[in-house]
Length: 592
Ligand code: ATP
Ligand code: MG
Image (spheres, protein in one colour):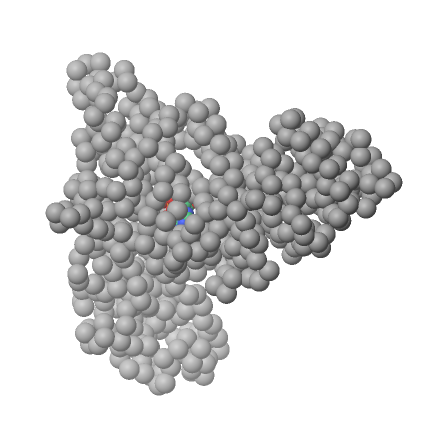
């Protein structure tokens, strides 16, 4: 393949686009890989298409290697199909909905579980047909609340999604493992630095669920890694251990709870100051000092069932030195929506006194109350007394209040302890590249996907669901590999292997560059030849911006019989005799 810069549909930009928040976005636009049409909606130009095609090639090869077969579904889907699975409602505002000329409702597919299930149901009927694995590479539509960072979070994006269909749970385990292995090969081959972390299974339910994350500061996901064992999890799904459950889990050794006058203490800091000015001798705790961690903070949120209009209050209790992580909560409550309650919601429930809310009253008010597992059974707290200016001390879980349940709610911190081994956890940010999870029988049940077993009885099929963000992978790779001069593509995805750059006006240099390019192409090397009438400075700048891994400069050195070979990633430059230029560049490409 020979691409000529003189005719390539490409205009690089000197300036950063005004809306670019992250390096990959900035560089993909400047390098002429993508152009913005609307928020979260991008056009792909020839170089961008080349990178996409390389990624898709690796994905197709690895899907084939596990026996998955490619199909292709429409993006335009009739409402009834999503209604049957419940997702017309569950997907909420993220679903693009539209109507045809007759007024029939349609949607643009955000993922395709329903269509895969229906397709298989239409074709297969016997246990002998299974197991089966199908995939597609398709454009998805999601009206993301915050499209971001170019193609990293688009509203239209390309995804590889695959599904496995098995008769038994053991079969599903095997299909899941095969996919997980294929994903490891895909992300390694593409040149990613990635981690596999436990994840929540999200809107689709299911059990085992893991994400492939690319660690990078601009990632939207936060994950933890244990400093001792191999536990790693998205913070949405992480489990941490708190203090061991109180030995006295009934809290009988604690003084009876007391209501204290704590005027003007609506915040944890003011409350702690006030507590440390009180006399605790009467409770057998002379000289006791309090910290924020001794207080129980109750945060008022509200939740809404999918498809419902009405919001319901939810109070979440966490130690006072911790914040509530709404994203972590949302991941666990999905498809139920959860947001912070506002003044109006609070006003509608006069029993909730802002700044002084305690759990003692919540059962009576019929307000749902969940606590973080750090609020262990039998633990004693200072918390609101449900009256302005008053708090209660020695309020014991299991004695003075009983939450309706537990939910991992606190914002995870560096140093929180691993639920497996108790060692400190480390926090980092990453981009979700892919997701594998065991969907189970939810969709098979919704659509009646069964196979006739050997005994003539129907068996409900169990499914796995596996996704890779193809367009996101382009940006994520750029994000992990760029430097201050531009993009630095790993070889497997680069739009070309070698960029041949003749410099100077010398016709000999141009002729020599043409010859080298042609010979490389005949060896199967993908060459980008900068045959523009531009200054060396412009050509070098563009070569660095575009990120082709090997740059071959044919210029001044020719008088001495040499050309210069540059490695885009390491910056290393070396002269090679012009006669060896082709073999040297070829060796770079093949790693020989
Ligand atoms: P996220 O949590 O980032 O919104 P998701 O969990 O909703 O992603 P999945 O439904 O698991 O995503 O989709 C599979 C893959 O598709 C993801 O792992 C990601 O790589 C990609 N993907 C999802 N949403 C987007 C988007 N808006 N833009 C680009 N790629 C996306
Ligand atoms: Mg996901």
